[in-house]
Structures are given as C-alpha cells and as structure tokens.
Length: 211
Length: 211
Image 1 (cartoon, rainbow over the protein chains, first blue to last red):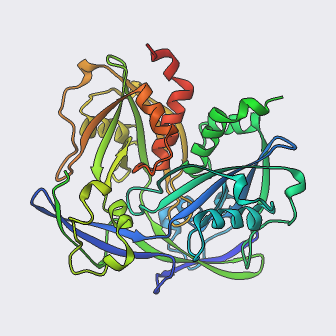
Image 2 (cartoon, chains in turn brown, green; image 1 turned 120 degrees about the horizontal axis):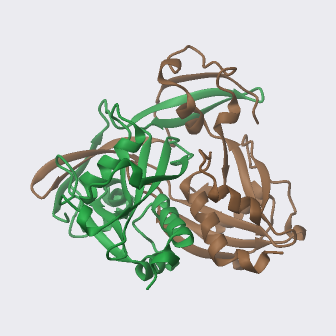
Image 3 (cartoon, each protein chain N blue to C red; image 1 turned 30 degrees about the vertical axis):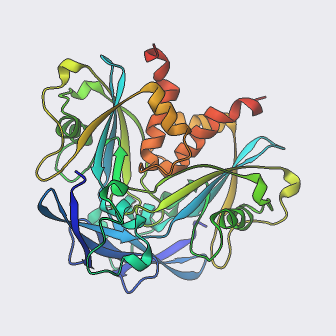
C-alpha cells in the first residue's frame, strides 16, 4: 500500500468524480456566488465483530490527505519527493464506506461495501440505519447515511480489500484502542465522520461488549 | 437568511476557493489518478455558554447542501424553482468555524471566529485544543483543528453574525436538545464534524453542567 512513487499533479480534465461549478444566488437582495462541487451521496458502516469484540476499519492511501501534507513550495516539483514525503502520511483509517453511484437501494450499497471492503457477508436485516447528515458544508453537501452492523467471524466469507484496483487493508481495533483514538489530540488521518461513528459506538454499544 | 432567489449555476471560473486538479501516482507498480481539490485548513470551536448552560451553534445558508437537495432533472432549469425548493433546505446548523487563510496562528484564527460569528470576546487561554483530523478523505484532505471554549454571558461583547456579507445566525441549544440531535435519525443539515463535536461534549463535559 505504501509503495507510492511518480507523484505529480495535472489540470483537472472532464472528471466523473469531481464536478466543480459556481452557484449564483441572491440573498436578502444581495447577489452572491459560492463555488461548489457535485459529489455523490454516500454510505458509511460501523462494522463491529462481536466474536472477537473488535471494530473493523479500512486503511487506504488517500491522495487528498497526502497532498495536504506537502508544503506549498514542494508541490511545484515535477515529481513529489517521496523520500521527504513518505506515502504513510496519506494512509487514512476510516469506517467502511462507499458512494451511491449504482441503481440500487442505499441499504444494498451498504451491504455490498461491507462485503467488498471488509469481506463480511451480511444480510440487509443486519444493517441498522443510525443517522444521515451532510458530508461537508463548504464545497460538498452530499448526504451520508451511517449504519451499524454487528458481524461474527463465520460471516467473513471473503478476503475484503476492495474491488478493481482498490488497495484496501482491513484493520481491527479493540474498544480500549478506539477510546485511545478519540481521546488523542491527533493529528489523525481520519475524517470526522469516522470519529463521530466511534463516539456513537462508545455511547450506545460499547458497554455491552466490554470485558 | 431564507430570502434566497435567482439561483443558477455557471461553470467554475478561476476560483480562489475551489482549486480542482488531478493527482497522478504509481501505487504498487500501477499507474493511477485521483481527482482532488485544494482547500484551506480550518478550525472549529465548541462554544459552551456556562452562564445559561447552552451550546452555541451558527446557522447559515449553505449552497452546497441546497444544491444536493435539488433533483438532477430540476438542476437544468435556467433558474432554480425556489418555491419547490425553499432556502430552508440549505440552512445548516454547525459549530463556529473558519478557514486558516490569514498569516496568524491557528489559535488566533479560532479566537477571531468566536468573536466574529458568535460575538464572544474570548482570550487565547480560554481556547482548548481537542483534536485535529482530516476534513474529508475523498476530494479534500485539509486539517481541521477542533477547540473547546467555555464562555459567559458577560463575554458577549458583539452581536456576532459574521463579517463582510456573511449572514450568520447564532443559535443556542440546551444539553437535552443536543442529545435529541445526536439521537435523531436525521437527515440533519449538519456536517459530521459538528456531530463529533457534540458527542465529544456529551462524553467529556456535559455531566458537569446538567441541572
């Protein structure tokens, strides 16, 4: 995962993933603009393995995080110096998640992500919708729906790790390790949605599974 | 705030706020690309008024959220039908926050945001750094630093509401109202960073202020 090289930046071509545009409006009689991005709605799933009482995370290289670790003056190089900026800077720890880009129900997409990324074959009835919120308010505003799903070791029928050319590692953490994570000052390579998910688990489910 | 009209969309010109580009890299020998956005780092501040035991939120119209509430087929209109899609759809409830775009310390920027948005004149020593995390892992990866700040009624020296042409309303919620918010299924017009902040407060501070 951390074998990253030949990093360079080019102008955005017509992209299926990032569609920026300008939002024009008149508020209280005043003309304004705001630059935003069209992005897909998404799902995230808190996957807790009750057999071994561990939280299931996914770990992957995230270009956007890596980019933000590079000093502005070093971003202008033809190729980024990956000795000075090792790939580990961009390795994120997240909940299982995916975008809603298929003609399937949101629940079904969540089910598929748990299988593809984490390797657990769960049924729709195992997925409990927790809450929906807006994933970012500045330039994105897509809806993310968060689920909770308990799994057992014998539901792990696949390796996980993503599909196509995704390189995703499944990582397990115990409840004390989760507590250390939310109590640490960071900087964490995790998004706030992951931190909220961990807090939700600690508040609503963890007591049942503490040894 | 909700007097919004003449909404329409145009291509992105050269924008100081949204700088999209393509990130090229080779991972495990395989050439890949990822489309991302250069955005500023930011601060968010949990502001709790201990005089009246209320959490201070900011409420504002967020074009990105509003846009995502519009059905794809209705986005193509010359002007968006604001009767069918009232501005209230895009009114977000958030923690006080701001981007790090000035040549000042991150702490000082947090202090200024509390004054400008919420009207409380706090000192740097009143601001406690909680945690830093990555605000989004897909297309953004900027660092957000979260603070906790207790204020009293007599620290409220200004109206708040933002600077320049910002239209921001200060909203207060009691601890039971915060609990209702994080226990609701939504959809909430709040970002996950706000929900994490509320959970952090409930876990670490709320007990002291329950009546």
